[in-house]
Image (cartoon, rainbow, N blue to C red):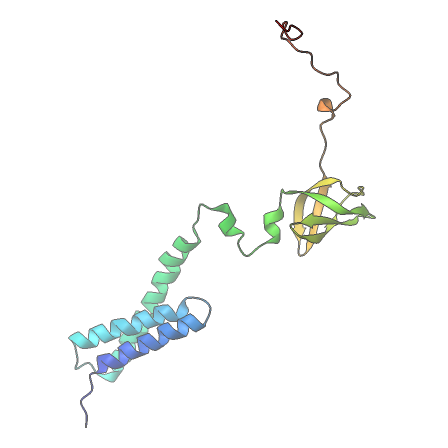
Length: 172
């Protein structure tokens, strides 16, 4: 019988699990692979360990490595100071609070707004084409909008400001 070091088998299993992790979404197989690599290290130190203790130790190490991931690594990965990171996979939610222009008037509560190079269905009060609206809610592919109030105090109805410079007309 060939005397093959068992720790190589565990390290091979670890490499196979790491390769499988690349092909599948998530991080679960990586942590099982780490447990297999640790088993290889344990068997390098204790080569006479039987099959049952190996299996029990592997199950324990796999559980512990997954707990380290769920308890420490995952919250650390999710904790971000970048507000855009939270909305990375929620494109529509990024539109909350954005001001957009109607490309189709809102009639009977429905119209369309321009978002980038596309158009999204909008729901809100009846407004004419070209009106500026603000997104207040997102429901699937529907944007709930409200009219943006325009400040009329700075419009052309107010008198033009006069110059305070007394030498404005002088050419000296």
